[in-house]
Image (cartoon, rainbow, N blue to C red; front, top):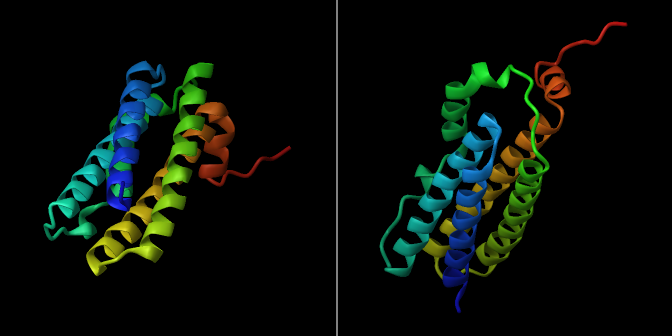
Length: 161
């Protein structure tokens, strides 16, 4: 199995995992983040499939932060409400972070060893996208774990005593 085929397998595994996690996630913000990253992973898979077919691809169209901002905007009122998050939800985000870290490591290595400029550009773009996915999942995990403190740190609030 070559690097692109291995990357496609990793993307398919991520799609399957994030789809199941999104279906089972009880927290609206958590569910939305999983759905947004799921769509990014589908786009990554399509880019990889295009590479296999020797098609020219425009890797600049991959942008998880734009999609995340749009997703958060749709659930912002719900996010301000303190909700309990199940242990299953938390475990889903821990698993997602592990998967993204594995992808980061893999794509970084493949970018360095890519046989063509097109594959190198794709792997470099995916490497950066997966790093961003990891940060998004880590931030969502932090939010779900302790919403009150998350808002304090994200809003840079000063605690007075």
